[in-house]
Length: 212
Image (cartoon, rainbow, N blue to C red; front, side, top):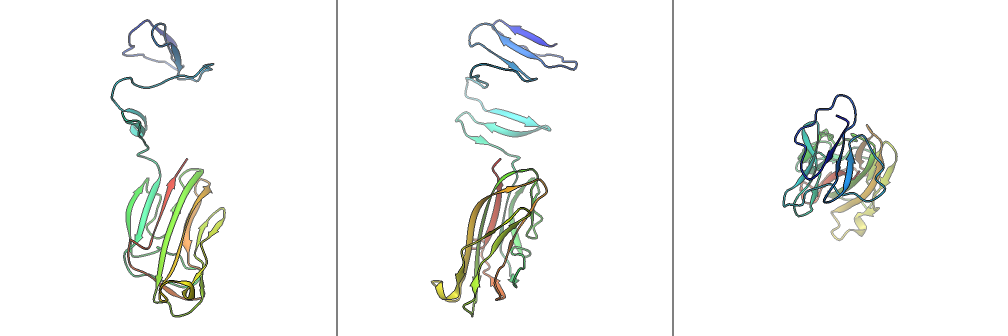
């Protein structure tokens, strides 16, 4: 079957050998839909007129869903979040979130739970980091960095002398980063002072979400 014209009904089943199928409705709301690609020449509408969700599947799983209220979710979209819930001490250039963390979620299993995320596809990724260092006894400057295969992103420079509590130093940043497939991302501690990360998932955490 290469094409089917519909008066005012529905094609229940169409067996396709090895070519595109085109469905054309000749009355009511007009238009056509070609699964092999087409030139419409005007805006088209695909969807339901009743109060049911519209889902798109790939590999037998829903990749995109639009519910009856218009909310769009992508259940398979790559994303993770990890929190520092146990002791971690880092020296200069050491990887943060490398141990004693709790993984809150990891859709698509792209995070290794040891501080490194690997991009599954080329795209733009939202990266957010929050780190609170504790028991700081010097005025050395802290400058943690988000390090990716393409480039690095420095966080706000902060020192014990400028912190509201002299024993704590905070580093945090959010960035939309361009990553290629198989690029890696981690967070690096940047300071000549060896420091302990405050053990609290509320203060020390990081996450990544594939925007598209």
